Image (cartoon, rainbow, N blue to C red; front, side, top):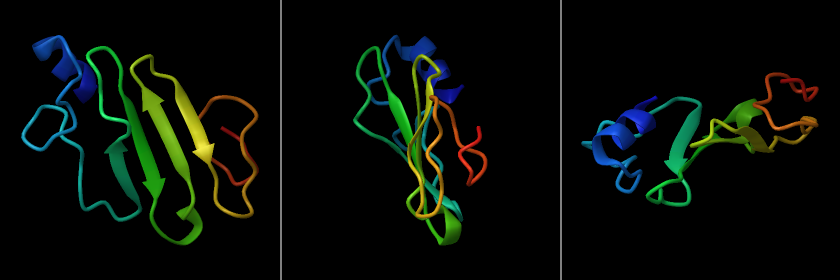
Length: 94
């Protein structure tokens, strides 16, 4: 939602995710790091979430400007989902 607010104000995603903007990424989270990887362009962005510790180490999920949610990687012992989605269970269910 914050990315879309930024786009409405600026007509571009360039510069979003930076501290001090409407779409600044949260920091200091206990279980995840969040990044815009690669850097947003005028019309596209990908926000990536990386698991930090314990059972979440190795978990990588993304969302883009089209609201496509993907699980990119899963921790050891987890099953990768068969479809584009955010995994919710170790068995690969979304």
